[in-house]
Image (cartoon, rainbow, N blue to C red):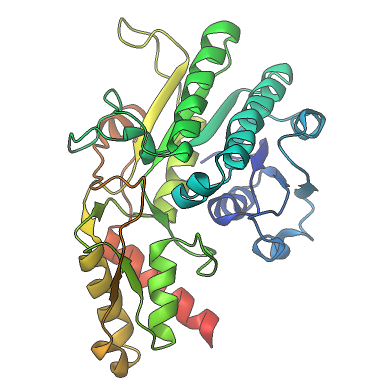
Length: 331
């Protein structure tokens, strides 16, 4: 584990970011959290505010001076600040691009100037676009299907370019449908798992977009935290005839696929153990969403081989944990 280091987590008040904050503080690091609270929540980091090793900076990554100050004296940057959601990006591509591309460029430049050891950034399985190959391998991508996917692919290109030009060590983690504690079940752009759980707890029928046959490689957040730890401490792969830069990309997932229909039935079954009346609730099927990849399943061989990653939690194990978490919140 990464210990005794000064690290910056952009988007640290968000879902994944706050889980990283918690873990890195427990490991004895000095953690700086940069977040403008536009999608992140102060309550996600409230328990850390009195920790002498934690610093919260409320600021926007679109402001370069904010990024520069946040990177001062930092050894590692974990970049998770972004405007997520495919539907949001389709509705407002300008805002998504401003934050996800220009904001990322500001963070990269600030990290370069501060001479950080390594910047680890959140990419996305959305970059695979219309490529139908399964499982997804890092070297083969298709045309992006949404503005959000474009921004994540541009991030990868900028990171690679900075590695080539400036020798900045960058590693991109292509996350596959992450779920876990502190994920917001409310709002128009909430992820499917917390939405399903929240609806069923309230004895409401969750909405499934399309016929429920699309599939995803759902990934418990503890697997993602584990991947970030490993990436920070692992030596960057040496350039070869295939990889001529200090930039590497890894799929971070469980390596198994679950359809939305299967997901609903698993969640309903787990919740029924605590409330038998939930067993009779049926989903409502709605229109399919634009810009969505139909099927997503990751090949995690590269991450396993180069950084020693493994999926510590299966989808079922993660869902069991998260069902208990949201039930406790609902009490």
